[in-house]
Length: 418
Image: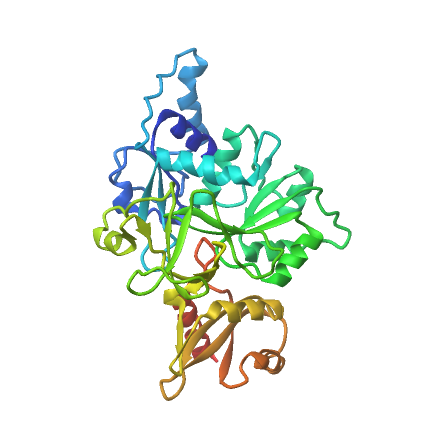
């Protein structure tokens, strides 16, 4: 029903947004200004002009005139700058913000971005991500536009759905892909042709090897943002993590003064694409800081090669200041994942008894006792101290990125309980 409503809105030229069930209160200021809210029965009521709960009775009443032979009103003419989709950011860099995707941006994303995956009328795309995620809507809409099949399956996991419905494409967060691999039975037969796109975090090489050996034909590590959409893709093979910019996407690495750096030098990433959003709604201050001279500055740190490929090293606000050294935790987290110490892992810093920040390794679903965990982690810390914390789960945004501030708070709470 969600998909049908979104497709109807797109056909009618109505801008649409999707929210999680628990977001009604947080989104109230935004929802109060919209023309129509269609919601699940338990979605908090907003002070909107019209709000309808999606129930069997509501669907029956809506369809009744058409079943009686009524002619639908013609769709309004569509212009390139008409709003199509309202999106919210994951909140990794602070409170969530909202952006508007215009029709020309949506069309460019499908024509120049999604088309490069070779999707066609024989493609069968598994809708595996919630629809408030930009990539989920873009890929689903693109597959249908190209005559392919959209597979909606909630009764079974990725592996079973791929075999049952002959799925050819799906998007999965790395952690969910790992969970799917962990659950594969010993007699599982690898699908004949399955492409998996992942985003939100880098793919550790051991996970890529497991996935291609047992489940997928091609594994693509996507880099993108809500504001920009898809930006680059790494298909593996070289094992270096560098991604190739998507057709139409421009990526530069600059210093603090916005000067473009020579290949091989690390600095701030800035991006320009034909499908990029242009501002944040009702937030001119953040818009001015992150959208500058036609470029978007996502807050990521990376480096470029002479052939144009880009390696994302991590977020600038993720940098840990430990004993005066500024360190990106992403590389350490990738090493820890390869050790298969736990179901999920995150790195942060916590103050010791003297107030000096030290490394802390947070593990969710640890597979060893504390002593063995320390011994297995020690090779990465030959010259420094570190702590190990067991927590229930690693806090991540809907896009799979570790929420470093929340992780640190959870680790401190766990330490107090001990």
